[in-house]
Image (cartoon, rainbow, N blue to C red; front, top):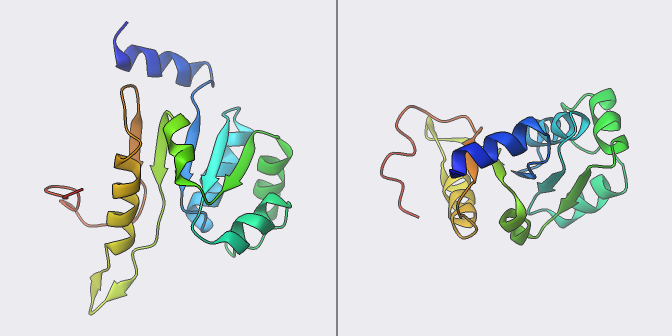
Length: 144
């Protein structure tokens, strides 16, 4: 079976493991919604304090609706970690890191760092989504 057919079947069956890099308001919201929809989800963030609080069921991220957070955590399919190794087990990887403006241009350093980390854990049958706000052509020629 082709890799694309395999991951498609796993997605349709809600068995594809999801890893979401960045647990800000976009990443955490996506993680909660995916978990509530039936997917096993790991939220990955570099901030150990944030990961600890989210793991304890405390919503500490502004902009995330409390009902969405409660549903995601209540699904018992959502875990949090600072360990990027969790990406090795993920079949769907969403990158949701900030792109702050610096001198009127988006600072892509967080995107580049996340992409490098994701690349270390890539293999067949993986779907990678860049959810961070960027401009057209951002990933063309990205050196990992």
